[in-house]
Image 1 (cartoon, rainbow, N blue to C red):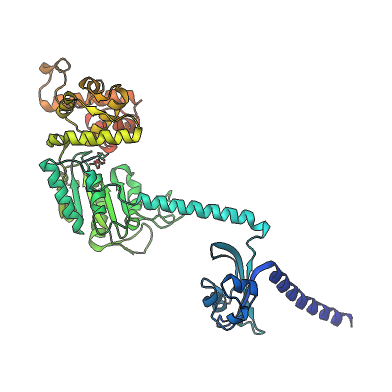
Image 2: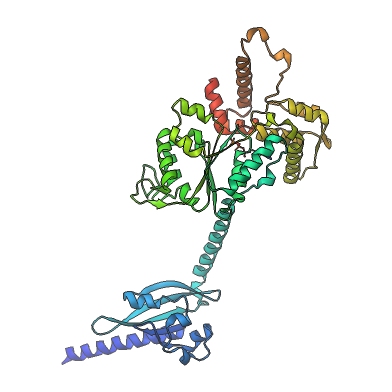
Length: 475
Ligand SMILES: Nc1ncnc2c1ncn2[C@@H]1O[C@H](COP(=O)(O)OP(=O)(O)OP(=O)(O)O)[C@@H](O)[C@H]1O
């Protein structure tokens, strides 16, 4: 009966294969453990038990698996009846590749599970481990970097100025930090709205949660909704395959700083209002609603009231935002702060560039005070930076400052103004601005971003001026 003999041989061979497999794994592996259907240990080898601080493996028998191996997933294998073929188990700082297989009875019911932990020293796995560790390290670094990015960068001590106007701003901002309401910061470009938003967050009860900021004017209109509220995978043309987490969700628990809120399109204003009222967002293209707990600090350099009157900004959103409003004074409204501000900025420049710390001559300071500073403190910083780069001596003189184009000196030299041809102050100002911006754009090869940096203006502000003055630009 050769067929029966063959069947017997095959059955024996299969049984032997199982035993060999088990023996091979057992001898190759750092650990083997067998559990019953209740995830209680039936058997564990001595080496593995020792790894978990159990001197005598027999003492582990009958114990729940997690008592010996706290992060074990054997219970899941017993519960689902499905193997976990490859996994990584971290044991006291070492990583093992582990395999867990269910044990079935003759009816196919799961009656236990067996797990093997491969040697960490297994040579062929070294490249895999090295790669894993490298990726883990990179991930940890990225997470650290992200957490740092989402921390407030400024506190109230960074807001320099003791003039009555500056003191009032700090008082109001401190009150805003204590309350958990929406805050609206109004002020010209470069007056410190973003700085103050950071400081309010840092002094609030949300300080250890994320601070997320973004500039509404800097994001193309078609991407703004996804940027704010998130998007489901493939929710819009050109969308990434992965889901996009919106800024509201990223800021959950913390503060969201919406810069240039006045530039938000009307359709999105309606959605923002709903989010502020209902404390939930619905990512684009998803039917799911996400609960959020975010304090919003909005800012704008526009005249929001005028925008409401002109129908460019929703009145209901304006009232919703206008709960606690802080007006930041322009630099020219607090000339007494010039001295401390210049000292502070010069110290920062010296620290960053490692150039010697410069002082300002009184005449240089007087000249700076006479300027219009439409770009406010940002513009002042740019002028001082350029002066530090170009000047030789330890003190910045009036001539050093004059050596730099001061973009908005209050009284332009008389010979450049053709008074007879000018009909109004506004017209003269527009002519001056057009001339200045055109010249700067010429210097920057038509690049608006670079020109904005040189002039100490926000990019959005410069774009608006370019459009209003009818100047040609490249980007
Ligand atoms: N009171 C201040 N003390 C010290 N530095 C300040 C102060 N206000 C503003 N700055 C500095 O001026 C620069 C511009 O400030 P910030 O970006 O906060 O202005 P902004 O009003 O948000 O401008 P924009 O409207 O263009 O976004 C930053 O470098 C900031 O650190």
